[in-house]
Image (tube, rainbow, N blue to C red):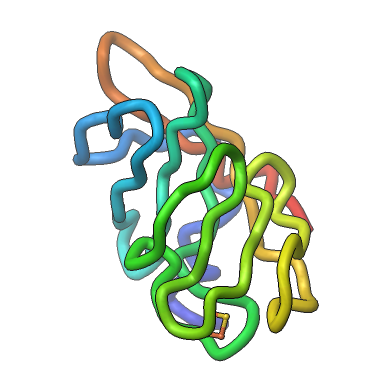
Length: 114
Ligand code: FES
């Protein structure tokens, strides 16, 4: 089992980053698990911070509505469900439920999408 997987199954866990502004993203970590948190019109979404194409950080990309564009080849992922939304991304990204609590963010590591 990898370190990243070892933190999954823990339920809701707080993140040590401030919530990103609307239309922006922020990288976050829980142990060895790297995440990218996105703000789409005030709604937060969290994904594994790795492009499904060639595994570079999605947090280096740019958000266009609900689509996160990878900085390397311009592939896109729909942050709402992790689905591929632009080539060369063909596989879905891993998603996590995220919520705002007392001005901070928590992710649910007990329920992982895709
Ligand atoms: S590494 Fe992200 S689109 Fe190629």
